[in-house]
Image (tube, rainbow, N blue to C red; front, side):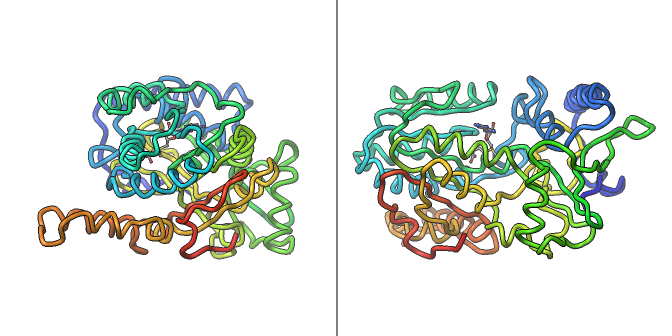
Length: 395
Ligand SMILES: C[S@@+](CC[C@H](N)C(=O)[O-])C[C@H]1O[C@@H](n2cnc3c(N)ncnc32)[C@H](O)[C@@H]1O
């Protein structure tokens, strides 16, 4: 079960400065008001949505630095340009077939866009346009600033909504894991939604509510019967993400011809909803400390959940896309030409070669991102990119 960090462990996390603390307290006050207005309880999906995306106050919508060593976490594009370059080679394979544009969702710092566009130009396969869709106005400004000096900037355009009838490649790295999730717990023969209420001091506390309406009415028993013959272990807690399925459906619907490449941490449903994962996958990131307490410093930390890739595949199938492949990040990058890109650097020059090997190690080592992160390809009317040829995983 997820529980707030014990006070002594909270003290082990870095302390924010007074301004950051005041910022978090403003968001806490807003969430408290939302709980009061809703009659004393909100679902965790609402809490996560406000903590990450409340206008001007949420983690992604306010101005704090998130990515890289000075932020809270490091993503693959921030680790190495090898990631974006490999991805670009897969994108180029699809673009040669379909023509059209690239659309990146949740571009973060803009680093992935920078690397993909540089590599596509080097491969002489520039897309018609490189479209960026970002929910955070603050991040959008940072992306513009970073990319404004890029040689391919004239092809880059920021969108406010998904295009219709898109042809080309849609890519999203670590976006699915920040879509708000519901928490569901199974007690005796009943399924409860775990939400957030206030204790006598006004602090956030967990509170379970019998599921009686909404999408969980069918989804919660569906998971119990599909993965546990109707009997999940007593107290089993998991995430369910109708938002992730809806997001994938919307995305797939907007694709006329081409591929969608989604990279994130997660599992297929049979592993996600496994008896051994009895406490779910919720995780928070604050200044490079990973911990399980979403009530700690709302607005200053990231909150994430692993992705159920089977649900992603099923949502895409419902909109007429096929699964082009599903594999580990390591297998995808290796089959996609990582070794060849590394060989471009002179191995007899340790000052240049050693950083490259360290970066590659972080991207593909099973002890780091290699196995934990997966890549799923969804397509309409295209052949499977070579990155999926290495070690396909079952879904
Ligand atoms: C964990 S960061 C990943 C950033 C970047 N892709 C990377 O790999 O470094 C998640 C990003 O997704 C964005 N985001 C969250 N929900 C989104 C949505 N529904 N549509 C588009 N972007 C979204 C966030 O604002 C942020 O830029």
